[in-house]
Amino acid sequence: MHHYHHPEKSGGVAALLEVIPGLFQVFGIGHMYAGNVGTGLIFMFGYWALTFVNILLCFVFIGFITWPLCWVAAMIISPLTAANACKSR
Image 1 (cartoon, rainbow, N blue to C red):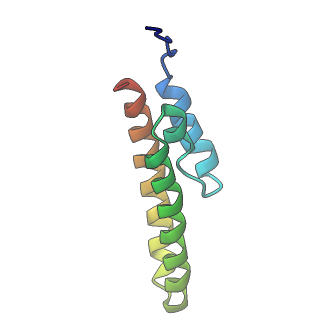
Image 2: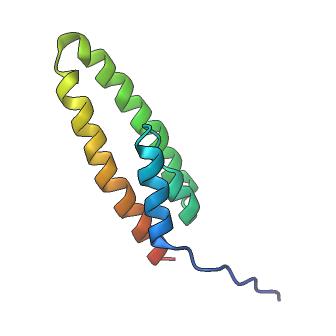
């Protein structure tokens, strides 16, 4: 039986991989780094779907309020959960 030692992932690197691309509206990369590919894809495509809805809401002006709020929420939640995913592995 062969056991491959997986090096431990850094929570700081996972958080940076969420924050830096998050500045450009791309989330989920830190989760993929942490080994949670499904969660990363959910964050990525879920945020893009939410952005599409907020763009549509900009036509009735509420999107100008909800879009930045969603981005700030993603910038807080996504790095924290990516860093915690590294600790639980």
